[in-house]
Length: 218
Image (cartoon, rainbow, N blue to C red; front, side, top):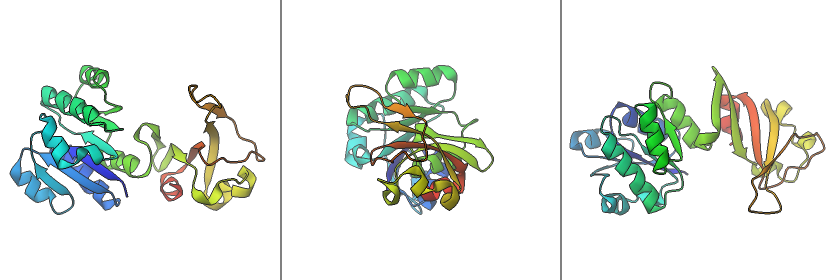
């Protein structure tokens, strides 16, 4: 089960927390607003606190989260400080909400791994991406159909693509494989797969299909 931290309980943060909880994630939500935290306690571990203070995030357990979403919108300074604090804690994947292109550029400069814009990225879609895929590797190309980068499922490791037969069994097409180079310093190489190619355990699969099918694959 993924542990997801969310900082900020506005409309976006609350919707995201509830969607993630419904998707089966363990959700840790932090906000200064006590009434909001009381409301959120129905579906998340809700804590009142100031995310601009590093010790508050550490004591709340945000350093143990797989992903932290900084959902603070209007207060740009607080958004930036919370993002920097999360990276300082060692959070591997920090997603930050931005209200403008400039805000987004600043957030990336101070360490945000992904930036989302509420008018373009709904909380429900982001929740689905966090719960089932890497955030930066999920793209909904049309209603109900998506492209995603996923880890190799246990059941098909060591098989050829023909043996795995994901298109027939799952309705999913493997577009390409990203495979580690022998030199760990080099980026993964991209392979356009053939039916006889063997799927290695640490491969990353770029797949296309109905979003519901991608979710079951993950």
